[in-house]
Image (tube, rainbow, N blue to C red; front, side, top):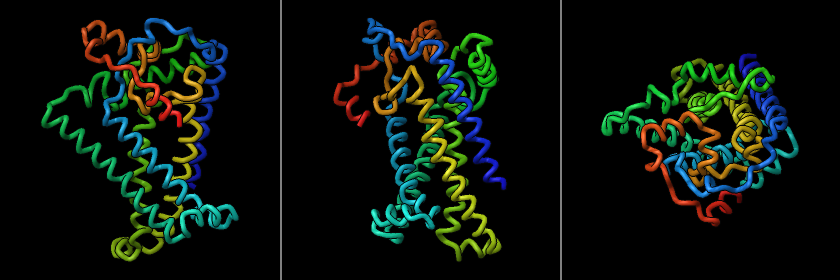
Length: 287
């Protein structure tokens, strides 16, 4: 009941957010792209290369986990057997599933180690406080309220900073999902060892939790997340930033006005400039 409630609740809120945005952006004329300008020639780096790599690893692992896990979750459906056979049967698919599960968990561990290195060795500031943090801030709550007011034609669109509230939601969803799916999956991977510490019925609960949480992650990614990142009118049909890590000055100024204004004010805008992505890079991103 808890997992189904979580599944339905998150998808309803997420799809409502995406649907209202689609309507409001259409009315605002976001489908009409502005003609190329001098601003489009000035390119800035938004994601450091390590973030691009992390995101690609995350995409790959999630896709492979979905392709090998969904047929097991829906094992009584005819299509599930056909998909499972593409991987060489249930045994081979299970092996592949575990390999990519380890990859996803390792990614989270590596990221946490990187954060620790930046905190301790480099003494980097702003990880926990300020506009660059991924932790929730009062500004995020204000943006949620402001955005829904904008959706309902009751106010102006909020000015976003470096990270928006929906990006932070996606970010922390990875940690939540990896923990929940990881712990339950580990119990199912090593059932005898698990039941030395917990009652046997925990394995039944683990099956339910693992399957529904994974289904929620996949459903959310392919609907809400894909809309926010790519399918919304001002980004359609795709935003190659996830692969290039860069965007032009027009996008910077419109999408992240507070960060852009701060970079101008503090004189750090020049240090953020980057080379224009090659045509081949954009083609690879779309493929």
